[in-house]
Length: 117
Length: 177
Figure 1: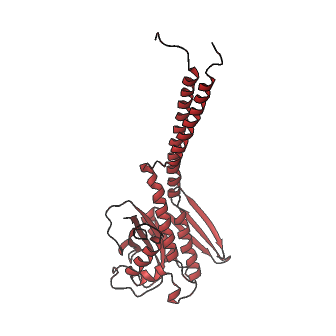
Figure 2: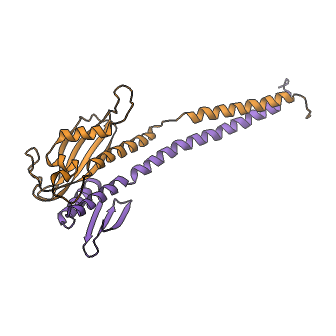
Figure 3: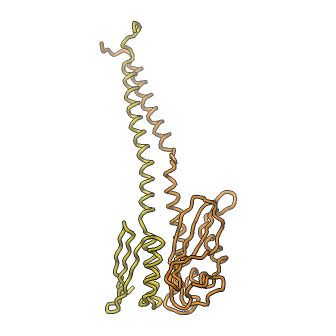
């Protein structure tokens, strides 16, 4: 310690500042990996394709003229309950030519009334 | 204590500090750290690709006709148990990625099965073609397929209904080999 002097204190201090900045940069990199994961996970969890698919199928019934057949209701409901644990239900209302569509997978619920699709 | 000697060294220190920080920033920002959790992103893209392909195949040319050519491709493939043509068309859609080194197309494979409500209101399943699955990292995509009354091919199970309108669930396991 006898040889120590107070020269070059600015350089030492800059070294400290830079190392602190590097810690913050590392924190940001750490966060960005998490963001990619959570974004992809929430996209995977949200049943966008399932809802679009069920909706397309029900509206296809309408165009086929089979929207009033109760066995199609139960095909959709029973298979989706068994395979995905999801409730898919729809009801055609002939008085105002509309279809009520219900989708619920336990975390996402979707209701829609399509009028004269 | 404080004097103005060594100012050039101070400037050099500041410049070197900026250089180091900029270099560190450039290096860090050009690299993507692919952690094991990030395969979710790839799964997401694969799932989207698969359901888009099935949606394309399940779109009829026009609605509201009993004419067979106005059923969607998926409906006709399942009605005639045409597993080969289903496979050809599905793989054509999902593998149709240009400029991949080597083959020129992607190397996705699939295994499909049909889930239907049988004559005793139970859910049953039958295989609908595809490759052999060796536990690759796979995603599942599904599509509801409308079936009109049809002449059931003998290759289908006996308990499958064919004399009334029905909806079956086509489940496709999709993976990259």
